[in-house]
Amino acid sequence: MRNLYESVTKLDHRCYDIYQLPEDILMEHAAYAITDQIKERFEPGAKVLIVAGPGNNGGDGVACARQLLGEYDVHLFMPYGAKSSMCKLQLERFYACGGELSENLTDADIVVDALFGSGLSEPLNEESQHIITRLNELQSFKIACDIPSGIDSKGNPLPVAFVADLTITMGAMKLSLFMDLAKDYVGKVIVADLGISSKLYESESDYKLLEESDLKPPYRTRFNSNKGTYGHLALIAGEKEGAAIMAALAALRYGVGLVTLVTCEKIQVPYELMHSSHLPPKTTALAAGMGLGMEYSDEDLEEFLHKDLPMVIDADLFYSSKIQEIVKREKVVLTPHPKEFGALLRNLNLADLSVEEIQRDRIGAAKIFTKAYPEVVLLLKGANPIIAQGEQFFINPLGTNALAKGGSGDILTGLIGALLAQGYDPLEAAIQGSLAHAIASRKVDKANYALAPSDLIEVIGKL
Ligand SMILES: NC(=O)C1=CN([C@@H]2O[C@H](COP(=O)(O)OP(=O)(O)OC[C@H]3O[C@@H](n4cnc5c(N)ncnc54)[C@H](OP(=O)(O)O)[C@@H]3O)[C@@H](O)[C@H]2O)[C@@H](O)CC1
Ligand SMILES: [K+]
Image (cartoon, rainbow, N blue to C red; front, side, top):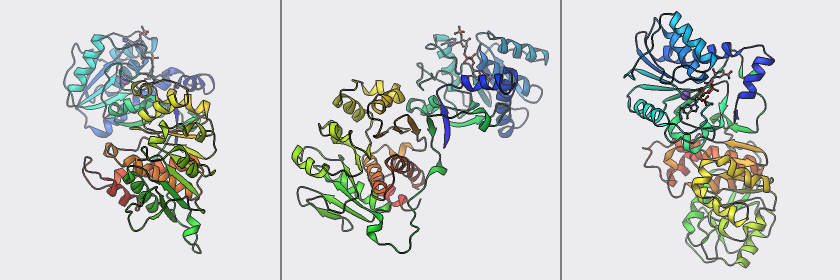
């Protein structure tokens, strides 16, 4: 797990004030992190186009150009000249080392985008949009300095942005790089240390980035155990019972001892699942909402939901008035996608946001809910799901586009339900369920368009 920051300005100031490391030293390290990647990936003589803006992001780019001079074929393009004092100083050094500015954008083996970083303050003008569009058309290896130019502090392209293969972000990971709308722009993201280890540079943060090493599958350690040791998950199956069946199969695969589908009508279920019209007395957790439809009256639901069990709630229940009671309980995980989250916020009279508004500020939208219901765990689905409780936010960047398919969400509900039933705390169940889901999608040995829910369930057994 790594810290994420909305802004690193405070961290930079700690460097100047406490560690006596001036901007110049930080910038030299920032630039060297880019130089280092170029040297690692390309032989001397390769052609490098560096597009540098007028501020300190541009300063990083100009310093990198100077570091490469003499060894690489360097082309430095500065459409707005140098404005910040550090950028001007770097340009003087570049000239002093014999560098010359390029008049035009040119094709190259490597493109470094150092046009705008954290100082992007307004939508890009036409000229900047034109430059970025032109850079995106080049068939080069593309490196973004700190943040792909055009991505704002909430992770939105304004309205276009540089599409990087690699983003080298300075000092620490930024939240904006892991928002859904930034996912198609950042490429691989690595952090550059700025002359000091991340342990000293970083301070505590409420925002965390999940990593593959955070996954802890529910491996069994007790030898003297029976199915009851591993919990009993009940899933409420509704109109579209296939959704609950997929969730149930995923839950069974992820370690829960017993799984029961609770249904109004007798339905055909796979032989490994149990089936009942009532909530089994020894249920240790509940999953409800997926495929529920209109089959149940509020009284029916009351019978299933009245017990104070740990529960994971999905899909149709976000539109039901029942949710107003559920969010007042403890040990609840909600897993809406953005459209359902909009409905949930409206249902709870918290906000009236469109899907676009939620996606443009996912953290802000999640905060509206977590401030009102700080005990409930929210998993806001998306390209990079956000898991939030109270003031803590976790982002899972590991999912792939293979998961964009009907049934994926039901499997996630099943995984979280399985962990709740096995006694995981709701926040840990949501984090671990989301990690297992995302990592499994990477391990399915199929083209990314071909993943079926059954593939995912299969791989979940091999994490
Ligand atoms: N602090 C440190 O210690 C370290 C900082 N580092 C680096 O500094 C970067 C931040 O630098 P920064 O604050 O100078 O901002 P930056 O992104 O260069 O942009 C500002 C310039 O762009 C302009 N501009 C803005 N929007 C615009 C628009 N839409 N269209 C056109 N112009 C626009 C804006 O103009 P102005 O608003 O002033 O008129 C100003 O001239 C950070 O991302 C990292 O790379 C590293 O070296 C590590 C150490
Ligand atoms: K940039």
